[in-house]
Length: 614
Image (cartoon, rainbow, N blue to C red; front, side):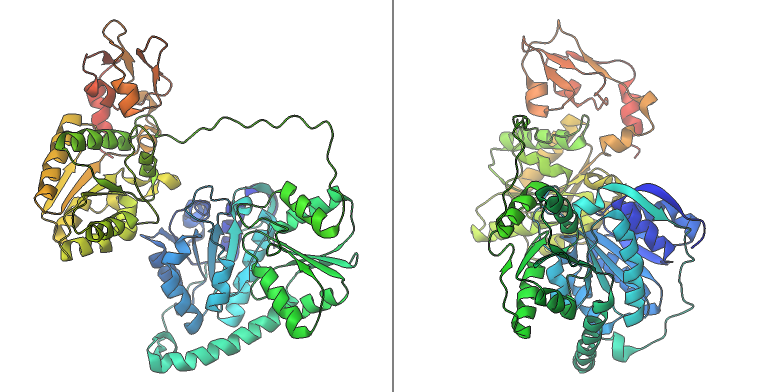
């Protein structure tokens, strides 16, 4: 290609750039670490390339947008984090049956170690389950190369391809060769084909047979992909994805020579290549990030081929099945499997654990104000609720001093789990479900419909900070659709919208809503105030700081103990101090101070009013 250069790039950016080089016409996704930067990069270049790109309301919708585009014949990409693929499973399974008319690249960014997730599921299993090939890169450059390979393969077989990234590929940087963007591959119109695209039982029976034949062809084709095989000994180490990088470095440190095979497609495995490589070996060691997906398949291949050599991997305990691979645990596992001594440097510095730093709300976060007001009003109302939580910034409400997230399991779980606890306790438990604006539109709506339909007396708090804040401030549908209006439209009788920065008003509103629930009603309170980080971005000159009048301060601790704003510091004498570098001027501390000891350094009302316009 012409006009190429080398840039230091984030793995996700390398993936997105390669997709634009390949001429994607449609890209869709839902934000979630570690995947978010893929769609963000495409958005940044969409006008330049002519690519259609969107943040969808959830992963299922994102998948369907890309899937529909590929059914029409356009090149398409859909991106999400690993747990998001669960939300998209329905159209994903169907897409294998229908196939596509061009490229459909499905990107799942897995999170081994659960750095920002509720589990560390390995989505390579999905490929086996769905008859969809899985491609697994080991570095940003390799990811860029495999994006193009995957899209060509998808187009060749008219079949979706799943690319499994992991955090250490998505969020590392290396020099990557990048070239000019391709022209988006759109089509003039959709050619109707209900026999293949309408999945009624009479059609699906035939399509399953076609799927199996297509899968057999794919299994044959993966033999010729650029797997990396080095024949250098009677022991064979098989890897996939980022494990390859660890293995190469570990073998160098251990100073051993073994054969290595890195497979591009952990699903399906290149069976003939595996069998031929193992035939020259006395022992097989499998190293992979996540579950023993490759290991299990290798054992199946060797059994089918009648090859009897020992296979060591995660099942035998040589490598961890919990958390990420590291150079150290890969070296330890390889040394044990190879029967060599693991060398240690005698003058290693003493290992010192850094003190734990639990995450806290940002200075000025409206969620902190909401949790404070909720704590005060539930105490006054003499209710002992179960706080059914959800996935978002407000998950931090689980921490002291709030302690207002008793359970949270998945996107949209707050309302559904809350209803289950309500019914499971015979209606005796007071339920407060806490959900965010983006999550409300993602997965909360069906649950709220269920609460209305089945007459569930509970309080639903929607913490509307106007953005998908936890994953980097992506836009939320709340910027165009009023949550209170939606709640009323689906039949919620008692709907309130309040600004958490107006403390007394918020407390009064929450108190009224709590009384409605006591009376057996369903109530929704929308706590509406934009994310502090987004409000302050580009508006630094407008921010009005607050300060403490030390003569008036009585060291009661309400501001730093109950609001827990990181900008408020407890001095040795118990009095409060406000860090001017951190304060964003939300004014909540000044409102709750019983001694009027916290003062603005300017026109705070004007700043808070401008903030409220977001």
